[in-house]
Figure (tube, rainbow, N blue to C red):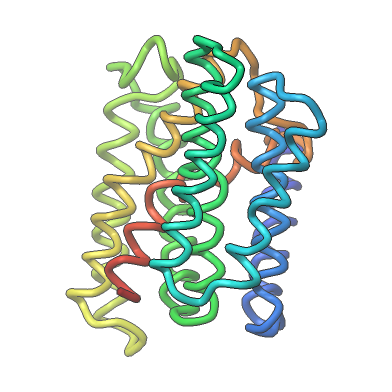
Length: 252
């Protein structure tokens, strides 16, 4: 527990420093590295070879460093997905696990981190506010569930989560977001509540999706890069579906 708490503090400090001092022009490098780590974690779960892991990481280079138009990015990622499926067709393999994981490389590793890099450049305040909401949501859901949780949310997927923790965290985030909006000039009430609703709807979906993967592959953590927490996907699961939604609303 102490290691987990210290790791959380260090992560918050590191993220805050990135937002304060990282030049916009270098954001794509940081998020590309995170995407590669997430790709390695997902590939390890699927028992891919090291060469296959590297190939996917190389495949993300054009996304982060060559394309500026989201339409080109989506078209390219569709091509990467098609190439992965075509590999199964060429080898005449009926491998549902590989078919499933091939789609997740795009949906869980490349797309969210690419959109985070763009939000960092175009909507930095929005991205930071959403990250704070997610941190608050996770903490309150954990504390609320631990102290008041009686009804399990998903026993087979994530047995520690409860409806009570989910409801308490939802109310807290919505009220705190509204209070922040009326006390500051950074966001209006409509914008902040819109983002807060997305957090309470999509953050749990990302969390439970990664939990499904871990249960399916019978592993405790997606990796071990963060002491006390596990891997990048273990820590950033809440952003998998949330960031693309924020990007669509805030940028497109």
